[in-house]
Image (cartoon, rainbow, N blue to C red; front, side, top):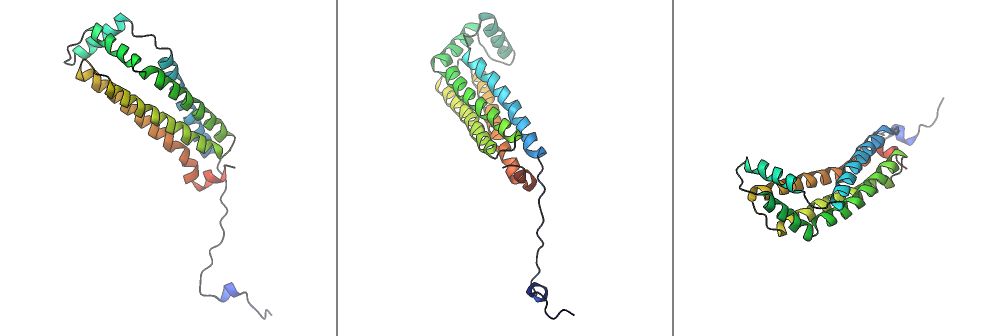
Length: 188
């Protein structure tokens, strides 16, 4: 017969059993795939901005015609002059450089998350932060250049707003493995 029982059996306080959390590697890998796809899109945008040689006259006229069907009164020369002013203000080169750094950080983040390193989370946050900064800087530069038409200004600001949304998504995605216990357990 047992003469003594352990103290926790006789206490009135319930004892919570320890539940082991099984690592789920698919969570960081899924986020890594999204970050790698995002880095490719940011990389293409960076390449487009850095290799910008100005807008050809026929493209400027097509853009002016499409905006004119919506109520603007633009010519191809005005559109070309606007994009030349943006280039002179450093819009394309600044965004291209920031996007190139964000692309590298997001790509490195994806690779690190695939191999299960927690550093990938912080690299992803850095890459997402850079892309968000890119959109904000682009918006500020756009605000400093006078547009020949309000519809052209609005369309450029909407594009910048979409970039801000993408930056916020890229900033939030790396947190997902940390918020889910099995994803956190899968990272070293």
